Image (cartoon, rainbow, N blue to C red; front, side, top):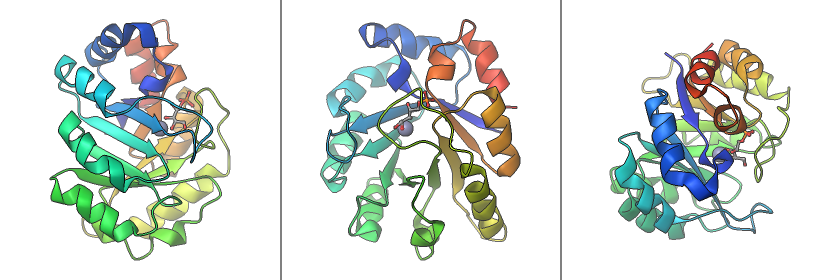
Length: 214
Ligand code: DX5
Ligand code: ZN
């Protein structure tokens, strides 16, 4: 079963309540929340207060993607705000093991994201501590970018690597997802599709979510 995590970044920010209710009713499996700090990535979004305000609107798990230079600083506030999964970028975590432990100590699921140019080998000794690997199929910072085709080879290699691992992390893919690119990454081994513009730009949200599942 492929899970769909719509990215709120592509929602109408003047109608966040309606947008969250829309994707909940349309059958999304979780809600992807992109936190950007204007340093790690050249864009700013929202933080824990907005997430806290959205929490009562849906039962969907909150899948937080941290694109910030100091991820440790946000673990406690995100826990308080109601996050279920916290994903940090390997490029930002100088003590990745410690950061993941801090997330798990809160009883949350822990993920690690890799930029398109970051090799998989940076995760070699940390797989056992991970619930999720988020493969970026675009350079993080903005929605609506084009899928980087080399991502498929990376996902295939990761899937092969995880094949015989007990409690292997899920593989999520973020960026440039539409029904065609989602089909490619699912064939390569993805479990979770993160999609912003495809879902929030769709005329029929439910149909789009079904189409993304492949
Ligand atoms: C980009 C974000 C994505 C973004 C995806 O840095 O991490 O989650 O919202 O947007 P689309 O699906 O439009 O590429
Ligand atoms: Zn994201």
